[in-house]
Image 1: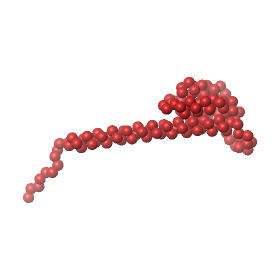
Image 2: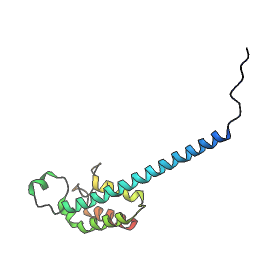
Image 3: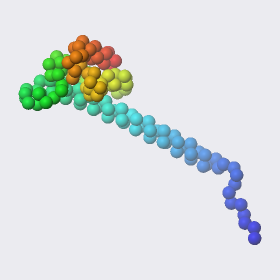
Length: 136
């Protein structure tokens, strides 16, 4: 008994359109995810700048002794930190290099932040803040 061949060798144009639509929707999801991630990172850095500026004037000697933040440097640039936070909050698409510079300044992952390392001159801190301000 012979059976009929139910599958054709040609591609179904409706199936191809469905694949293209699926790919476009996946690309759209990825773009929205990246935009949301960048927005969240921007908000986190704004919060981080404001928190660092507020910690600059912390009067508790025990808490100041335990922190690695150089409070005298942070208090010297207190208004600059708040100004940059306000600029960054209003910027919808900041320069990624600017965000990277702010992250390196605030995080001190590699020990090269002038906010945490006394061996780095204060001029480096001022230069970084000027660069960020001009980029925003």
